[in-house]
Amino acid sequence: MAIEIRILSTIGMRTVVEALAPAFERRNGCTVTRVYDSSVALMQRIAAGESGDAAVFTAAAIDALIAQGKVAARTDLTRSFVGIAVRTGAPRPDISTPAAFQQTLLAAKSIARSQTGASGLYFASLIERLGLGDALGPRITVQDGIVGRLAARGEVEIAVQQISELMQADGIDIVGPLPDALQSVTVFSAGVFKSSREAALGNALIADLAAPAHAALIRQKGMEPA
Figure 1 (cartoon, rainbow, N blue to C red):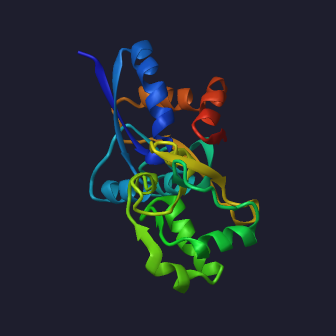
Figure 2 (cartoon, rainbow, N blue to C red):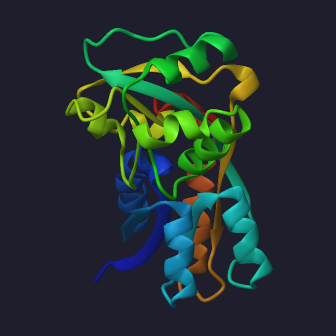
Figure 3 (cartoon, helix red, strand yellow):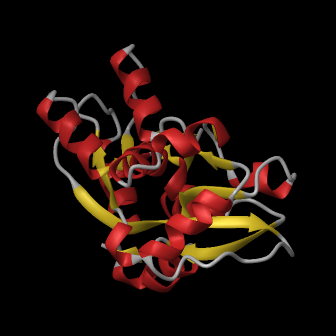
């Protein structure tokens, strides 16, 4: 019977984990059970008693688990960027400068962001910082999951999320990242749970995710190696 290890992973790293897990399973004679959600939601599930062998979260979430004594150490994997997308074939708005980006937001009839994902929480704080909260609030749809799918279905004009997550939606065109001055870079990191009975395999999986040989794959999935 194959050994099973369980990885709890942020949705932003899903495409990388899915691309690398099958070969890891073959090399190690194991099964990698993958559980995906936002880092915030997974942290809430861990607080309620859920666990696993390895965690792939935001760096801040891994640090919190280390502080709680639940994870041994942190390995940084990728750097992820917030971007926007529109329905395939729709006009691509100008987001080349902070001013153009703000005008694009003000002109949009509807916008979607994630509820507990790092990008959604950042976007909520960004529009407040820009003084756009009152103007945009009624036009923003907030939900977890891949919000690009709302744009694909024509339910919103603009979807805001990690580019690596937007890439998981069919039927959209990714316009690009936020302007540098407004960008938020999220570091996705990994750690092994101290309670894991398969810590060696968990560490091997994390080492594989962090391997320099996968740099091209990481870029293909919309991120940069850490």
